Length: 158
Image 1 (cartoon, rainbow, N blue to C red):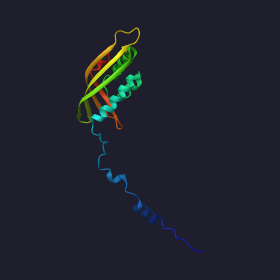
Image 2: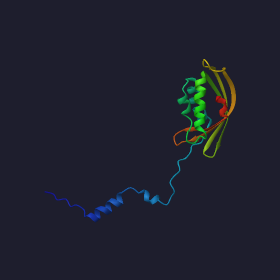
Image 3: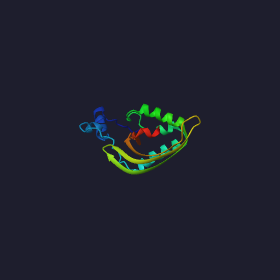
Image 4: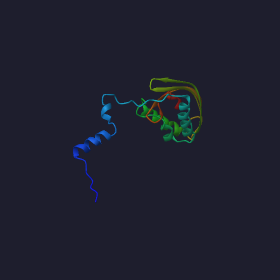
């Protein structure tokens, strides 16, 4: 019968320390890495605006508000109420847009967009809507996707 010799506790502890992967304790002096904000592009603006167009044309106010960052957008509650009123007043609505300029401002992206709205008033409402508005849309990175953090002028949805 063959006999196996187990290492002594101190030798085993030393062996485990030497074989263990490097610990994060070595990086304790370094500040934690900031999640990098990707470069904002025209394609990013178009992707978000396309979601808005699909939502407004499918008469879905909840889906329309989804690309907006409620926590970062000043006056979001009033804007949300304004959008709810817009959806109650007009249907169906067609939305077209043309991105004319895209810029990056620090961690934010911005786009100047010509937005065209063409919609029929619901029964009992005022008149139909047809307008083209030069709009400035500001986008912020939420760690996963670009979200709208400001929309100007907001009055276009009245």
